[in-house]
Image (cartoon, rainbow, N blue to C red):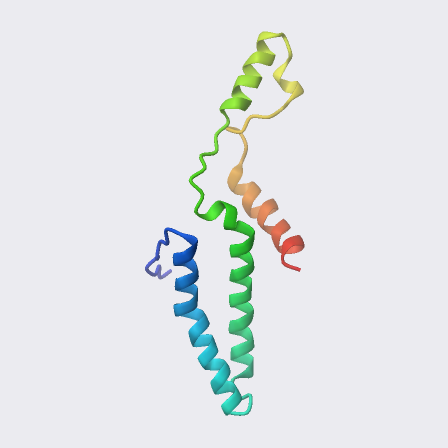
Length: 121
């Protein structure tokens, strides 16, 4: 496996600028060449445009999370679990332990397939 250089972007503007310079401008050039050469590059152009549209939709879906400074934690859930336990409520009633949750499995097998099925149609 060859791992290429990863460019880390720090804002949505830098992402849009990178997308424009690296992908949209060359795509526009390919569109012009395709027109000049009587649709000779039609399949390549359509494939590239489809991929760029897919990335743009992903960006729209994940925009609120991509460059957010939000910190996600489970402190309030833990406080609720402790308070319920202190009052004699069995923790099995809630059956929620975020530390025991298999987040990788959830993302790969549930979240991403759900996005593909429902958000990208």
